[in-house]
Length: 487
View 1 (cartoon, rainbow, N blue to C red):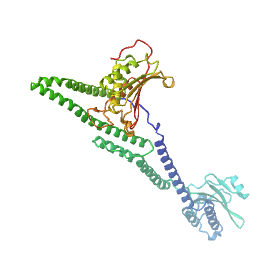
View 2 (cartoon, helix red, strand yellow):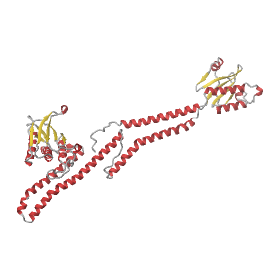
View 3 (cartoon, rainbow, N blue to C red):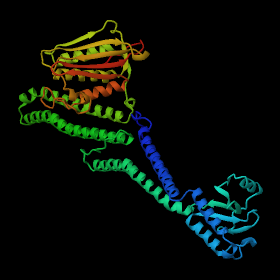
View 4 (cartoon, rainbow, N blue to C red):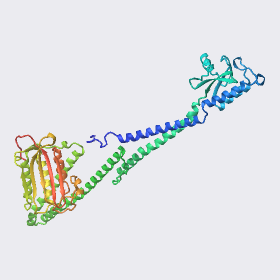
């Protein structure tokens, strides 16, 4: 399996990470804010500790200030006398005010009553001294020590503490709220990730069933959008490639039909015994067979180079490299076209100093690529306009080795702007007419591109409608040495 030749344009998946991170942060903030709000509401629903403590102290003082005869006396804890009225009052205090209260004798030594078992710890000597001096005493966990005073007399000491809310009650409220927020976050994530991925998967299945026009329709700026765009671009390229292959079959069928028909006519004439007419048609048969042979050779070469390019290994194409004179190669290609089309002016200009220049290439393949470009210029130019070929040497970019630049310039019909991105695609023809003068299956430029790239060079095309086309080759220059001929 060949790895991708380029990194994704978006690099590290930052946008999707930020989107997921933002949803997580918002979920945490929402859960935290909800839990704080429920606690604040629950705390506000209770009276403040000072109010509850004052309420409990006032009721206890009221009971302790009663005359002994008015009290309902009973056996209290630790030998003190606490009536059922006080016990009932403390029970109501625990239930309604949510406060624990333990009542001790004025000296803090004995427990009178308590609504908590075991009772809150008795006041210490230091706490009693501070209470006598009029200072408030607060213990940890919001526990307070208060005196019970009536008409200037201390009737007892109280230790009070608010009842904390049960944890189970908090969980019963907070857990469903947290689950609700998490469910909302999961729903947002499903819309963020699930729906576009489902659309991409559905488009892939439909495309696999042969629906070449299907697209994802996902337009996003994050990595999922990048995947969707990559799928759509792939679908577009595959659809164009399949269309080009269908056009290839139609083009090849058309190109083979005419010469085969003429060959059939010549054979029929020979069978009928008309030797003179059959002999006269032999030249046409030879030309037709050469045309068929050239067509098959181009298709085979283009297929071999295309397979190597699709596999990401253009260097896998077997090349018979040798040092070839770049000016001699260009001259041979131009000379062949001059002989084939004598009415067309083919011009050749070689920059001074390039006559001895050489390139390390497969001479036959590179010359064939140049001839393909020259044939294209011949086909799509008026017959009275020249086709010019120039050869020059240029410095390589950023200290790279020097390169030779070969340009083919015509003054023909040009290529439309919308067709320029596809001119190097196999089987593409900017001119869809199929006359004998402009025949072909759209392999010339595609084959030239594959050949030049297999040699480590580049090929570029610039064109304007009704002004002409310029095709530029660049090939690395090789070190001086013995030259080989390009046959």
